[in-house]
Length: 159
Image 1 (cartoon, rainbow, N blue to C red):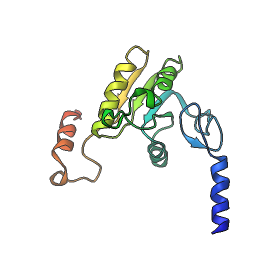
Image 2: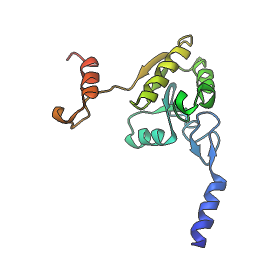
Image 3: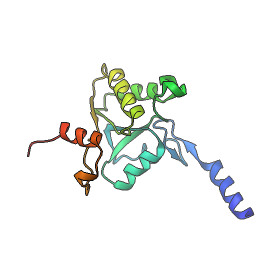
Image 4: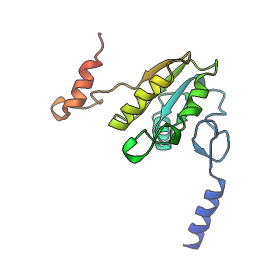
């Protein structure tokens, strides 16, 4: 157990929070923020670091990220000052940033936070987009809940 404990202690000493985006890494700024191949015009906003890592594993976007550190939840006493919303607005005002993608979970708290962010970002000169909601790839209609089906119908596209 001693070698495992020593390895964990060593890892804890090397881990830092990126002052730009809130990612967890061994350097500040993190490797994503310092990667020149990333699209600096697109900031993908996520709730937690795990969400960032999920998007990175999927390899579907080459954006910069912004980790909020949670969602707004008045019942739990989590307000805008408890999240990295001010830093996001500051980043959105950078002339290089063209789009903010809100990649928040499809929960009540995630949706409320997304609406709040849309209001807060409305005076910034950026496009604001959200992830699509609806039928998952490989999903069967008879197994989906009514909310997912309603979101899929509302977000339908013409072919």
